[in-house]
Image (tube, rainbow, N blue to C red; front, side, top):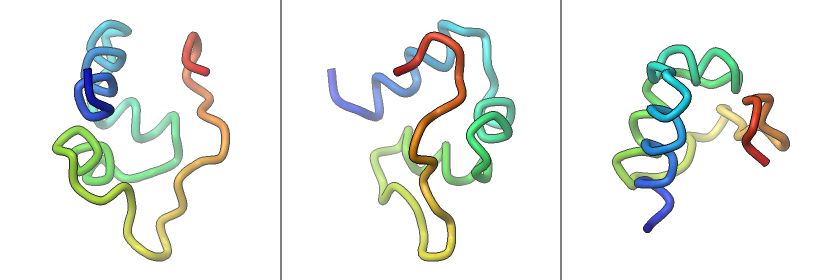
Length: 58
């Protein structure tokens, strides 16, 4: 399973929308969409959180 598939599986397994996950991680919903689509992780000026605050995800 590739990273984009893992992100989708974990997010849906926890019953989160892209918007809810984005809020918990401090990024935009569009960033989550890009990650799930296998596109670049983030644009400049939009940092990827160092440690996710999503329960159960390490």
